[in-house]
Image (cartoon, rainbow, N blue to C red; front, side, top):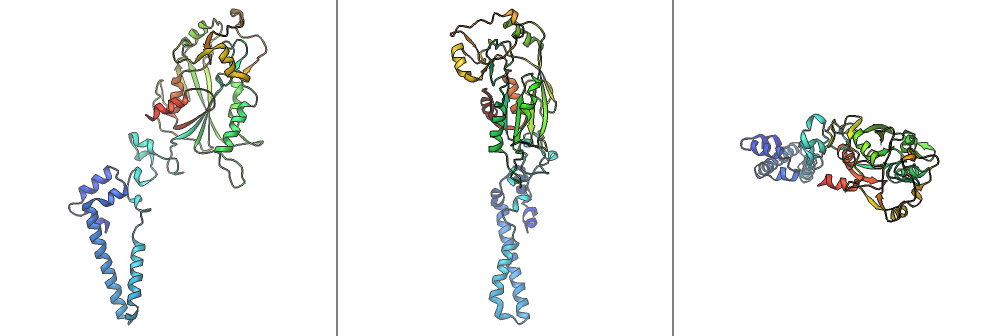
Length: 365
């Protein structure tokens, strides 16, 4: 019936136009040249069926059941008609709700592949990204411009445990399992010793199964040297830090894309040539020393031992009115943009102060 209506003379161009423009189901069926034909054929088809059944009943001497048979035939005809829930499978495109394969997608349409078709749709899209940057979680009480921020015991686990309770589904045994809609970006700030704290997700005493990938960030030597000169530092230049990407055990595949600001693509395991921003930059968050101490509160942690390269800095108490960066060791916003735009992040949960929310807004415009 549909074939006669859609592929008959005069209807081919209408059908092609509808399919190419990815029309919704209601628009598809309301096209005048198709809708009228479908209606006419349907009425004719139903009438023929009823007539045939009526003749069969009369031939069998069951004329007294004619009325009941007519009603039954009508019910059967209705049941044979395709329902709205099944009709989209005839169409192609986002309105049909069909899972899309990689080879079927081109250009921006690849972005519309959905994760809610396990085994069919290979791409993760619009994940909730949880971001933690150890360079922004605390500050050394002395020589903060020389010392990397310490990671306070238990702080990270409290944050991660809260996310597990709220976001992770439970299995048949009531144990949390890693959410397929979430991904974590845990930055160690160039301190590999933080790995265990940053990459362990637990339910009670049991670790939750996950897939972990490490993204290495390599800063340019020149940009770090300029910052060290500003802080009157000497010695070796440390250029690398690791971002631990935690996801569900089956992993998360994203569309291959060139990076926004750096060479390579998001399939690589490193981002290199990243420029460390100047502490004098207008984008650097700064405030008076007194206000900064109040802001950090208990997150200002006393660190024992001699500060690195302390011989070139007096370390004396600073004036309360002096303005200084809130984060002496934070990276550039361009790195935040790379993580958000190139790793299927559609919403963020920023576990350390930053501008990730702003990046999400920019990406959505």
